[in-house]
Image (tube, rainbow, N blue to C red; front, side, top):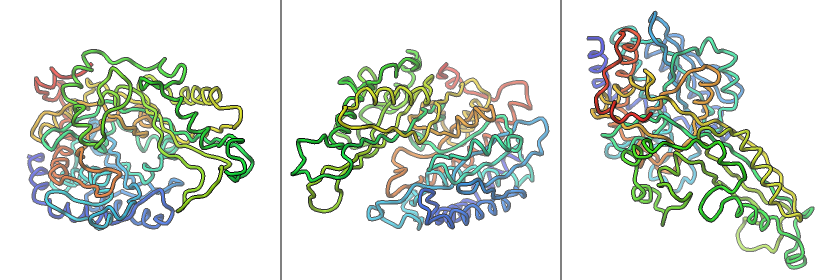
Length: 476
């Protein structure tokens, strides 16, 4: 009866939930830009207040040296599991602004989609769980499981202080499992659970040449241009078959089983679908793998930005004194980002021409993570997706990196259930970001069902109900 009341409340309150989500999105919480620091604090206070209105009376804002955390807990279900609900309220910069149809921080509903920066990443997806908590607390006065909420404001800038906060306050964040919704699903009627995320290593490579900028007429052809030297170095980081040309790089790469590859080919996007989504003229990368496998099962090295020389209008005959590139690795089990860092530095030292000097700076690192599909929380999530969306979930790998998954594993010793509500066309990190509102409402119901199914894993000796399709398709 309490479950049905919570689900009915969810339907009745949809107009208010949407209005509150719009209020949430109106805060310009761009963590990377200092001018929005006041808005970050205002948003954190608003979120804590909303949690208190929902029934989590002790919700509060915690300073952490970056942008504040929002913390809440409800621990009144003895002998029941504890779930840590994670999300982030900070967003990517909205630029280029001229490409937005409506202003990024004036949320607008067009058709069945809500447009605005953060509508999908991650305010809308996170808020679905907040409202799921409210649905139970306002109708029953209690939750079926214990809950800890951790909503941060620095995810988009690397969550540099989060691990130390978790370490320092480990007892406050103690839980059996974490759940986050910051991911895509294939279609509105096709929910998904991600059982693996890639790790990452972000580096900056600077090449220095002459002691100062030079006249290209006087010195062109006599001095090695750092921009040219940088291009030569970068061109040697991949071979002609799309593999990363760093000795020892693939030594620890875990090879996927034939069974898993066959499964992902059945449920993952096709090469054609990926090319249509990206508007690319053709695929590129490591031979012998589909495009989806290249972005999930295999590691990658990407050049994210280049800086050097004159960037203004018109021309300028100059040889710059330095040039730099931002690069990022995506890593797979069992790769160690710190070992990859050492291998990369050694390779750069080998291939840097003697006429210039290279400097490598590492800016961020996170390990890859895999969650066993046999874990009770994954099984509970499968039930929740089926009940919330009305169809069986598929199980996918993600090509992205979520550093907090590694932090939860290392510091708290818990796995993370990754259950997203975004769509492939949500335009995350791009202008005209949007959230499909049926996914938002189904996400609230999925959150309600997840808590119910997770409670069943502890309350009963039997496992929660899993369909034969799930059992048949589960990947080892």
